[in-house]
Length: 386
Image (cartoon, rainbow, N blue to C red):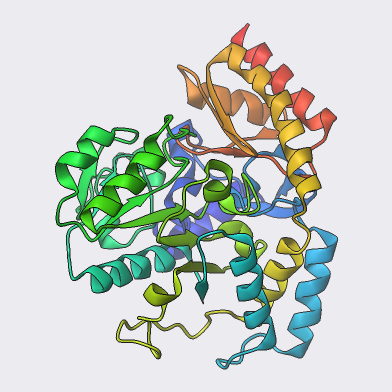
């Protein structure tokens, strides 16, 4: 079945024909989205059999590429034992132990099903722990689609030009003086330690350290949203890479090994405010479900120092893209800004290369990307820029 036929059917039963807005690809000039049929390694195949080098990787989770055999085997084995129980399992405990061992600031962790759920509950917990309601966040950051986080957000909200209500004292990223002006009385500062939803924007020298200092001085909690950076730019995320520890951390994407799973964690005395240990309620029928925990464990247990050395080595090859636009890279995530991104997207797609259908989103490296795939991307961008 063609993409056009699938899209016509989807429009009849799904708002806009897609289950997440940026998938519509209107912002890059496509009348209909790509419908994926399968993936293998660094490649994505669409419903009509066209094959692409995939630099989106489901927006970051697939650090070992599509259909990674060990992850697939782990999920299949788990499915044979049951897909969901609504009661604790051994793998939940094991995955929590892996997270606590890897992420420097996390002493206890709660597993949930999505980054949005993790972020909104971390905010609820911060408000309960401090007795304060206001919070500080940054323009262009994205912490999911819960109401408090949507105004001046990045990701698809910015791509689609949607004006959304929200809360928070919103200040520019990397502007410590602006934070200092609004932090008094705030429950928390909510930040992507490396911005990944307005392109990749690294923290300025001293920015994260300054946030930690301001939070300590005002009794404000520091929350790192590491949904993208967690397990991607280092095993312990941005807090390991930059040496600044938050009070709470939000995790997603890689932590679930490509299945729907997210988490939030932090110091034990904060996390023990959560029910049933404490008075901050959070619950979820599919939280810590057996398939996702099996996938997460399969991936996290293989994230050795050698994996990150390999990704960094490959990332340095991508740095050649800096000759063709504003390029930023932190570890295995990168972004390229050019004057006509929709034209670049279509140019690459015609040459069998799939990048994010939004200039605000990152490109993601995996261990499945090799010299051939990297060379193809660089050559295609060079051809576009000629």
